Amino acid sequence: VIVVLIVISAVVFGLTLKSAFESTFLSRCEKFDQYDCKKVWDAFQQAYVNKDPCKVPVEAYDPLIAAAPFKPQCNRMMFWSKTKDVVHGFTEKRDCFVTLEDTLLGSVLDGLTWCGKEGSKDTNTTGCPGWSDCENNTVRSFWIRASAAFADVACGNVTAMLNGSINTPFNPTSIFASVEVPRFIASRVKNLNVVMVIQKNNISNCTDPSLKNLRQSIDTGITFSCKDVSESQIQECGAKPEIACGDCW
Ligand code: AVW
Image 1 (cartoon, rainbow, N blue to C red):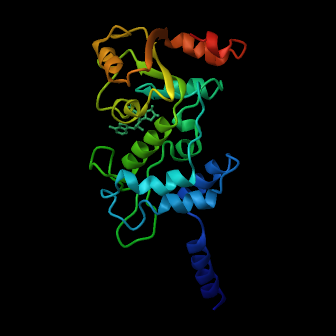
Image 2 (image 1 turned 120 degrees about the vertical axis):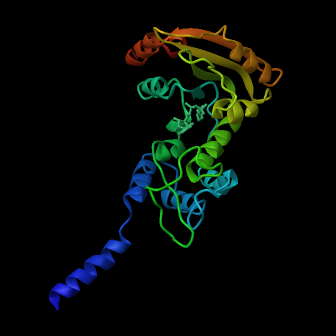
Image 3 (image 1 turned 90 degrees about the vertical axis):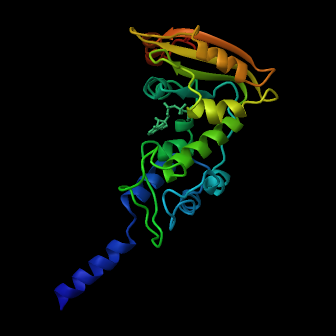
């Protein structure tokens, strides 16, 4: 009887335990002051729980964005496309710039996979649709919504790191091109400064034709500049706090 009771209580206790996903979410969230992480978790869950993981529209995350709004950080906002590692290698060492992944929502969900299921209140971390498996998938809709909200608060001088080792550094299908750039408005954003990350075997640079498209697609009134900067120079500035942010490139 005792053994049976122990087993039953262990099972009941187990069901009330937080999932590893929720624990990761909350512990990453608690590194940020000023937010009620339990409220943020509830707002997050309502976006996808008990839904077909391919039927989560971008707007499903509106209440989450409202629960953890992005704060404008003028002159420090950093966007990127196909340069995730070099950008974050830099921003984790220096506080010159803030990327989406340095904000509460971006850092909490960076690298995670999640989805719900019709008829269930669980959050799954396996068996979720991949990025391109269906348009309105749980993870992709979140990143589109969060990127839009982050771009909405962009102000002053905005920086973007693009990749000089690919054919089309400014790719119209990227989140940067399709979601973020269209939200930069001249009344808030003064200048868009592209840092073209140049590696040894680079195949493009600031003269690439795709950058002309970028220049043409930004709101009139926002000035544009582009600078080719070697990856090693970016890494060196990350490693040397004595170099002023404004002198990195
Ligand atoms: P990215 P973006 N499969 O480097 O301009 C799986 O292409 O789009 O840059 N994951 C994907 C896929 C895919 N096909 N495409 C994109 N991702 C995910 C937010 C993946 O996690 C920031 F503010 C990849 O690391 C940047 O300014 C990430 O999306 C801007 O959006 C970026 O893909 C970067 O988006």
